[in-house]
Image (cartoon, rainbow, N blue to C red):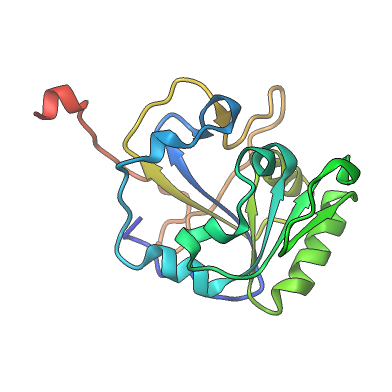
Amino acid sequence: MGDIEPQVAGGKVLWHFTMSLDGFVAGPNHEMDWMTGVSSRDGLADEYATTTGAVLGGRDGWDRYPDPGGIYGGAWNGTVFVLTHHPEDAAPTDGVTFLNCGPAEAVRIGLEAAGGKNLEIFSADIGRQLLELELIDEIDLHIAPVLLGEGIRLYDNPGGAPIRLHRVGTSDPASAIDVRYRPTAAAE
């Protein structure tokens, strides 16, 4: 999203994902291979690596990708917190703390560890819970030019009330974002 200011380290709770155009942040079973070949603006990973003090994720995602050294291509170094109901069966990993507490307490712990930098939320379910608790300061999305059709939605809350958002960095915070893509077969 080249139309926004770079991220800054401000002690924020930042829900951050690359998302498919149809609203999925991971494929079925947390698969991420759909991101292969998707490019980002230059310096984006370094921007987040610099402004992130700690990461909070969920157990399902962690079990699928248990590598704290792989965050932002290895450019980031910090503490990863994994929120789980069963920390006793998690394999101990350097730089990872398994938490069995409520999401608000996990945020408190994560922000303290972030040391004034941002706490990034890498879980759709935890992000939804924190949004309901009004603990999300910003949502950063990078929309990938792909339609997945199924998987893990960024925000899945059947029957819940809509959550209105204000767009950051524009004179009209209720403005929509306009994107235009062509299917690759039509673009060739």
